[in-house]
Length: 43
Image 1: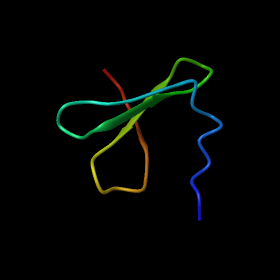
Image 2: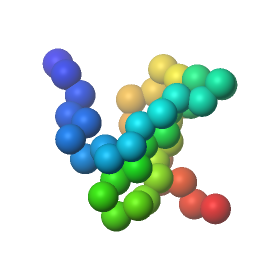
Image 3: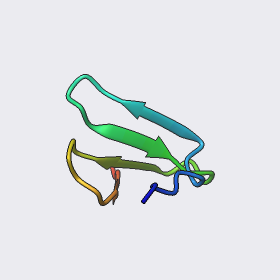
Image 4: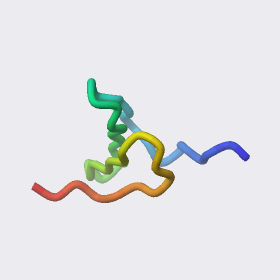
């Protein structure tokens, strides 16, 4: 099964392996390497 990434307007992986994705509302989400669920980033 392929993950739906259509909501992502930006996607990157940092040096620690954490994935970052931004949606069309400029909200950033993250997930640690090996996780399947995204969490909303709050500063």
